[in-house]
Image (cartoon, rainbow over all chains, first blue to last red; front, side, top):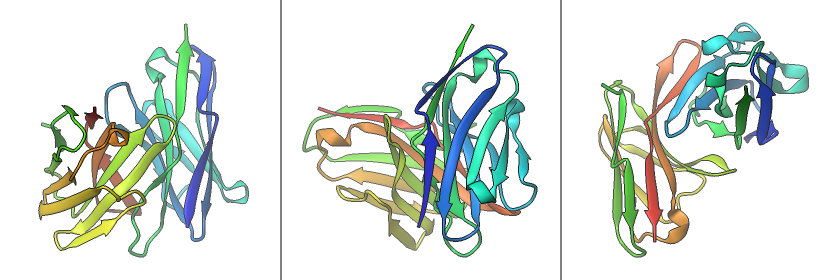
Length: 115
Length: 114
């Protein structure tokens, strides 16, 4: 079984401030981990993914995430928030390898960026 | 053109009506998925298909059925719609890429059941 917990359903930052969105996972096998972003009235777009290569993963729009096995975490960060980053962010986990490619999503974190 | 398309984008219907949501993809992927999104609940998997002859229930399949008409088409049906099926529905596709599997999402269908 696999699960994802996103800490904080709503995060608010000022423009130019650090963005930190938290994700913890549970998986019985080595996981693949993903961050998706959903802009208003749009579908989900992949930001970045971890697939057992480098533990620090860089994604689009200046976002990055670090896989920490000891903490079962995959937190998303961006050094300086921009107004265009306002969106909902979803962390997701799937099982690596095998025949199970289903994603399990967290409940999402809504990011608000204040001017 | 979008790789994953969904029709309709918006639909309002009445309780008891049969509704079909359609998904098409041009990515050549074998795997297709249907999710529903509710505020505060994230995305939950309804059905998934790993190829044309393979259909599997997800975590919330009750009240829904699917049809995989071709590799590129995967439809979701609500046999008798009820108000708590009001939600945003997403189709997704995936294919094996180096090191892992990435799902690509359509733009969503907003369904309202009155």
